[in-house]
Image 1 (cartoon, rainbow, N blue to C red):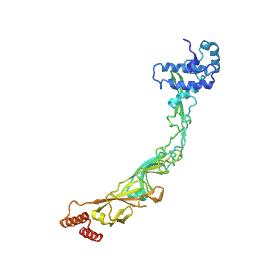
Image 2: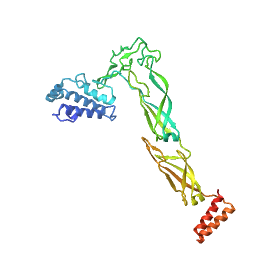
Image 3: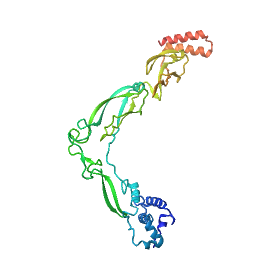
Image 4: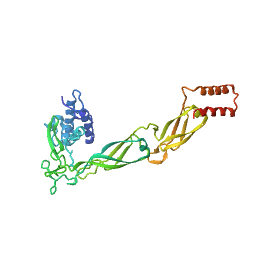
Length: 375
């Protein structure tokens, strides 16, 4: 049964070359056998390629429009030849495989940037808060001092690759069910550089780089936390063929503290007070990240009360003059056992409160007596 090439590409008979090309690209991607595994997709793809081969060529299209497929007289075989739209189908294949085709070229190797490296560093709690400096030792690739990165022995140099004639690429033609295609790949002899080293440097064995352990000093900003990433420029692996070095990325983790808990830029800790200290009030020495300081516990402090030490928290990263707060959670300790004398005084206090006969002065005196038992 005769085929209508315009219907195959789903275009009108007066479609422009751009319309035909656009329709062909769309359908070729849709029915390519490596993409579409449905039954009949391969045959449909062949029809699409055949239709585009004819309609993309002005002379063949003119003959087809006048006489139909019979007027082609065998022109345009089922596969593409070098004159029938080969570059376009090359673009299609390149979009699928990233390497086929007319017009696709591999670039000759030039300077290459070195790889980035990662280093995991664990900090003490206060070190993360106030920052500082640390020395770390890393293993990385550095430029060979003997050959200065050229990879060649002194007095010699790289020579043009004979396999690719210095192009850094080789072309391989292969025949497929859809025609003859050319694949361009990096030269296997020179790895795409276009040059080979016949007299390698004895220090680096022609690689231009050597492995070396280096100690570097890094600055830790105040306020860093677990998950913070620091970038140390140029401390990764050395580049190749004159390319720049990569960077070193230091990933931080912070050890927990036995007293403090951190929430962003705020700190918190727990203060234990006796029930008499909570009732009478007191002054305690409380640990902060800057050392111990006196903190007043007001009389009548209730359990779970939170006191705030403003500006005693963590410096803001990038603005160390601003700091979070330190929150003190009051935990009132109730004794599980009391002595006979303590019980007697507590019973008397309870009686006075229940009967509401205690005067202010008398009650304070009684509380002082009870307090003396615990000092």
